[in-house]
Amino acid sequence: MEIRVLHRGENTIQFIIEGVDAAFVNALRRAFVSDIPTFAADYVMFYSNTSPLYDETIAHRLAMIPLTTETERYIPAEECCEEGCEKCSVTLSLSKEGPGMVMSGDLISEDSDVVPAYDNIPIVKLGINQKLTLNVIARIGYAKDHAKWQAAIASYQHVPHVTVNTDMCDLGGACIEECPRNVLDILDDQLVPKYLYSCNLCGACMDVCDYDAITVEPVEDSFIFRLESFGNMSINDLIQEVVKLFSKKADSLLENVKKL
Image (tube, rainbow, N blue to C red; front, side, top):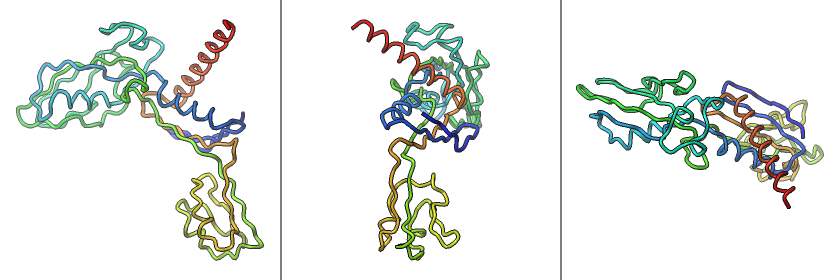
């Protein structure tokens, strides 16, 4: 297996993974999406709410705010208790009076390592003499149980392989115009894939070519993998969590095999 990074941003990464099959890459995608433990609002205690929104609506919005996650000092709720304690939960408080917009940055956490990943997410707009006071109990969970615990979005596709029959190609440019990703271009009197990794294998260029001069096929054991963090964890932490997860599952499999 070989990995080559194509692009890396603050909360995104795109890389090519070679020498694996679709089952492995899909398992990797599922792990990033649903098996990484993160903090999220689990339940909310309202003390005052004279805003235009019901308690349930505000609670749902609070649950969708990504929280930075510390997994060294805390454990998932399912491995601890039902009520929440210092081992599995963190309390964030909010108290604000109108007029004004209540933002995620108004949440005050008892732990500086567990705070809203972004402070500019709107929660509710308060009018004159309206007030919102509450406590949020955040706990660690998994996105396979609820989407509020999802830490990232991940996707993949086969690496495309573009073949151009230069004897048949008339360089008419119809395939260039038809391509929705602007993959193709003419360089030195030849049709070439200028932005190969932007190709999504739609086949539009093949459909419009009257001479069957271009062929786009997937490379069966090579994939373009895209990962974007919601802010709960850095890209490095996400990858480390998935590596630990795969290692743990492999060890569990070996133990079960030995028992056979």
